[in-house]
Image (cartoon, rainbow, N blue to C red; front, side, top):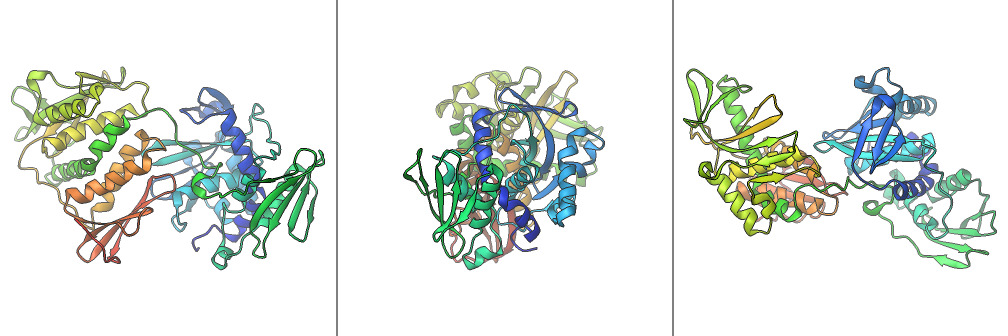
Length: 503
């Protein structure tokens, strides 16, 4: 398969794309982006407090694969997979491989993450649904729900927006013809007319849609089947609709992430340059413990001697970093007289940078996205600032987790290389992604990658930006690839291609 969806999926989905963009615009207006809760057994979801009847479409994993709901064994026998099962039947009828394969690899697409959005919108069109809910549920993974809830009406033609929706539909799913400069505008316009039961006629300039109100939508299509402009004439029109300069990055169908705040933006960007290095060191600790066959799941903390005891004859020096109370969603720093240098450095920096709420003895994390992730970020940052050798986590029955910085010099200092860069950067992205908003995500992820390269003295290669950031390892390069929404999509390693590089 090349860098596009299959011809069969393109043929099936394209006629629906303009009205799907239109319907999603209405859906976003009625059900604003926000926190999502689900009760899959009851086929219910709540977004921004709005209750909806839903079905599961599928999920997108960090490895770039899409798993249909009907193929996920977790939901076997549950009515909530009925819509995805219907798509499978549609796929069998029209021989669409993306609909009949339970696990679909999207890594051949230029942007697999954006491709998962488009897979969902293609499914929405084929099902005739009223909306799609997209939310982050673990690391960079995403879940996709579809709704036919009657509280969401079918969108009607908006003469002020129709140009944007037609342009969106005519650019959302390019195929091999795009390499020759050709499009598929005629298919989109006919599909839009059929959906709204509007007569469609061909004209010398392209195509025309006639509304019952007497208005006419004239779509000017060039010889390469691409939309040049859209004009509206008639009782409610008589004016040209501004040509949309639609691109995938601001496509009205593409969902934003939930709006609950994570860490304060300035604080998060400030600690990012070291965070991926801290994650790499923590991974090095886990490997060191495993290589020595030590029990990594249940060490005993002896606060009086400052040691973690893994067995009668295995001890590691450690210092307390803090604790997270999952019930109260509160982070607590150690008492002042017990503060380790890494904790003192982080609290002082937070205060000096204008974030006293993080510098206090307790940090309230309720009302923020993934408070457990935020606690992990605070702990890892403190470990790194104190030049610790990794992080130990001790869970207690009351829901409290204690974080300890391993300071024992016998644990080796981590290094980076072509074989570890992908693991380190993606592991950190999985931790940070859920606590960043859409508007700052690219800057956050960019700083994360740059900070990792600088931490290990890796020459940073800027010539591929903004979509790719490179790192030079001698004759090899790592390429951190960013998706349209600013997320880190993949990290690939290969033979160096660039001439640029600065440590």
